[in-house]
Length: 282
Image: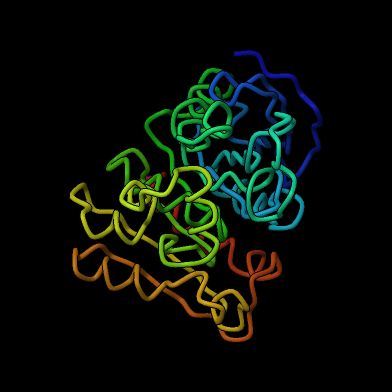
């Protein structure tokens, strides 16, 4: 699988790079950002996958979150893919900000006309790790996952659906119970169809309620002044209740004064990378 380098910038002793590749899963060209810490020059490093939220590309996290310094200190590669296929020329893909382009929701679509390209779940969990492991000094046994909003939903479902695959998981303001909120209902009905039973396979709250794998320590930060929290789009209490029932450890931090923006992520990303490093470097 060939990668074409788009950009490379020295950052925190390592290099922040962006690549383009032909995705066999999504049947289009995809961009992915890769941060290589100084340690990667001499040895294999664990990999932290970051999934971004609605409307984002691979650029938002690498330019706004300030993650590179902590990744450099802990010797962790950061991989941040785009949030959806691009340029597939599907009718309606650019009509709304919360469905289609920039809004893949990390599911494998089953409905026309989306199912040919919109297979973000398999892209993130299978194709992307193969690509990274084949082209970079990545330790294939040590990977973790995190994300924001729609990407927080993506990170949680990837970890819960694949027990043991990811050493740690965390999220910022994740969509915790998409089958119960407007964002999720719009996306899932479009990508997965009207049978709501099929939606449960991509709902973190439902998945947590039936989880039976190795211990998964979850860290979630949520801004108390997040407009989407008050609009009942995120529903973290539902996930916390499900995890409590199954005795899945969750550290949930409600941060006073913070909203849904990247200023919030920037403020706490170092804590999240430390959380991941504890398990990745064990």
